[in-house]
Length: 240
Ligand SMILES: [Zn+2]
Ligand SMILES: [Zn+2]
Image 1 (cartoon, rainbow, N blue to C red):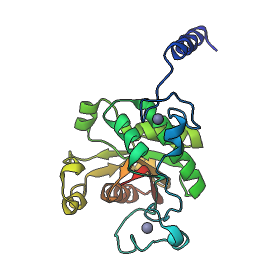
Image 2 (tube, rainbow, N blue to C red):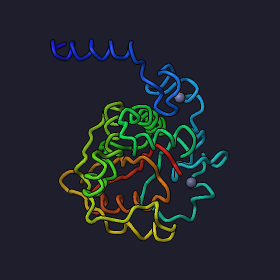
Image 3 (cartoon, rainbow, N blue to C red):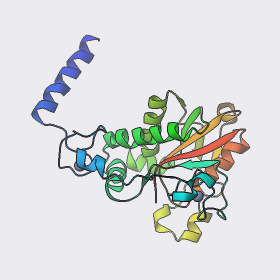
Image 4 (cartoon, rainbow, N blue to C red):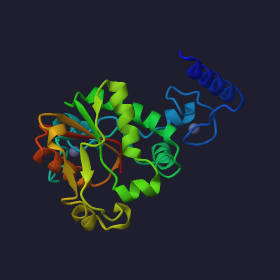
C-alpha cells in the first residue's frame, strides 16, 4: 500500500471508531448486517422478490418457472428480460431515495451488491454494463448519476466491463414521476442513441435504480439493438 493511501485508510479507520457509520436506510443502528451500509434489522427486512418472473422481474410465485407471468404476458417490451431483486417499498425505497436525493453514494453499495448477486443468480447473458443515462441537464442539477453508481458496483462485483458512454439521451425528457401512466409510456420514445462501436455484438446489461413501466428501458433497448447489441437485459435494483 502506498504511504498516502495507508494514511487515508488509517484516518478513515480512526473516524469510523470515533463516529461509527450509521445505517444508510434508517440512520439508526451501525453497519452490523450482512450487507455493507445496512444495520442487521434493515438488511433482514429488505422487500426481496423471492420467485421472479424472468421477463418482467415481478414476484411471480408459482408462475416463475413459466415466464412470461400472467401480469406481463401482454406487455409490449423490447427487453430480453428484467432482473429486479427488490420491491420499491420500505428499506429498499429508503436506500434509493438516499442514493438519489440525499447524495449518499455509499447507498449504491448494498443496492449494487444485491443487484449484482441477482444478475449472477439469474444467469442472464451480459458482458457490458451500461447505465440508463440521465439527461445532461439533470446530471448537472443532481451532480452525479445514481444509475451509474449502481453500474460501477455491479461491474466490479461481477467482473464485467462498464461503459457509461455507450448510451446517451438524445433530448431532455420531462421527469417520469409527474406524468400519467399513458404519458410515461410515450415520453421516452426515441430519446436515446447508442454508439455502434461500443455496443455492436455485445450482450448489454442495462442498469437503473428503479423500473416502473419499463418504457424507458425498453426505449434504451431499441436504441442499443439498432446499434448492433445482441441481447439487452435490464438490471434494476427495485421494481415499483
Ligand atoms: Zn437500518
Ligand atoms: Zn412477468
